[in-house]
Image 1: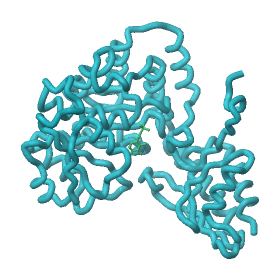
Image 2: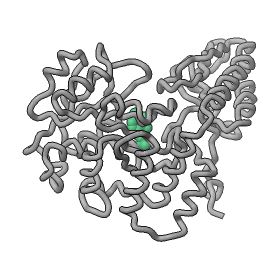
Image 3: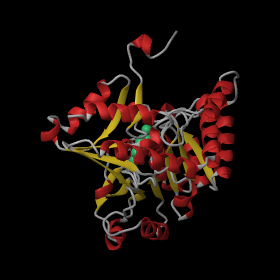
Length: 366
Ligand SMILES: *Cc1c(COP(=O)(O)O)cnc(C)c1O
């Protein structure tokens, strides 16, 4: 049988987050059966991409939707759409677009490794700190878009997304929101675009629990149609980001499921699990466990911060993080620094909290 074990790979219990490095999330039954059904028949792939997009747009109250091979691919395609918005003739020029408008505005404190995808299109960053006046001054004849990476609840230095949208839209500059991990809350599927953002990007393989190599782009039809012109079955910048029929149908099933999900019950499971961890860990000498809300990604779910006294335990938090991975079964927790790590309930399968608690009792004992 072809499985992880046959490759010498140990499966991991995920008490970290919907991190790509451990596989994002697990696809539920509805998603797997949609993918399985899709695998059983040939189809006109471009037509399927269009119809799944239309359905997703309707379900998420957006004008249009496009299924990408992940949020990072979505950033790249959205950046290309912003260039095509000003220069429809740029179709076959990427990434050599110096002859065109080629500037993307981004906020300094939102810089992150994924913004490389903007540069890959050929765009140049104009980096600003973020006051409204600074944004107004940064918009030039060469600007094609403004990128916004929501980070938790906070706005960038002194500016909120609503201000960014007002200022950019008044100059006909699309605002693109990388909200890859901004689910929950489910309302974010329409919130950013209803605020006036041109496009919002989400990972399909994080909390949506669709295929790991999928993503959704939601928003303006004209921008999304321009992406079709450079993507399968057409050739251009988007062609390497082809999405298969199984991913298309799996992602659709994932969004349908997510919209029906009992989000309150799920949040309650996270509360109960954090409570369970705190109750079990706090009596241990040299260990302090506390509920934190929201979690690091700003999702409205609690997680558990564990602080240890390395002198008392004779090991650092990093040693403990490594020991969790060596544990049988292997457990991934979220590292923070030499004295702290987090236990995140959002990616646990119900029942696994008991295994994680038992591992904690063993690894955090003096
Ligand atoms: C995860 C993430 C991405 C990449 O998403 P993929 O779906 O893995 O391509 C991009 N931006 C941010 C902020 C993310 O958290």
